[in-house]
Image (cartoon, rainbow, N blue to C red; front, side):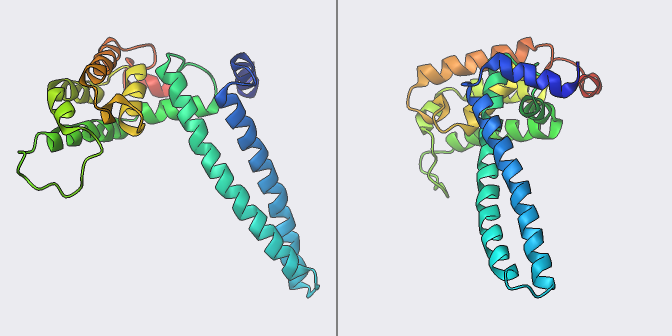
Length: 220
């Protein structure tokens, strides 16, 4: 079965109402329309070169529409990436979908893992500053809550660096990047529970997250 066929079947398995399927369909439509408008823009440029009166208005109209389509496509790329990350966090990182494959490769990249671990380190060390010390920027998280789970954050950062499982990496990414995550809340118990799940998933590994890097590249 071809790669495109596999992706189509996988999207069909998710169902047309799945958030990733909807975002992918919208993104495909935006890209197709961008290509069509780009052709119109090129025609406008040719018309301008040949000194046809329709050239300038056509260029302005096409450029305006193309800019709007590119902005929409960029937003949809962000949405598809987040939805793919959600699927990986749910344990579906093996799906042969372009967005999932892209997020999987990003999460397994050693450079990205180090950045994610550093993000956890920075949050922990900032929370451990002495109470009287001036903070350049007011933190988005609750300092007492982060201070209380400092050891768990340190352990999670170490597991992220040390080749942690893919699903755990995805959940750690969500913890840091999602403003609604327990990391930015006021409930120490909820955050401690989520960090426990993340550490378990990082430590236990999985088919995609526990393989050596060289073998991952072959499997991807």
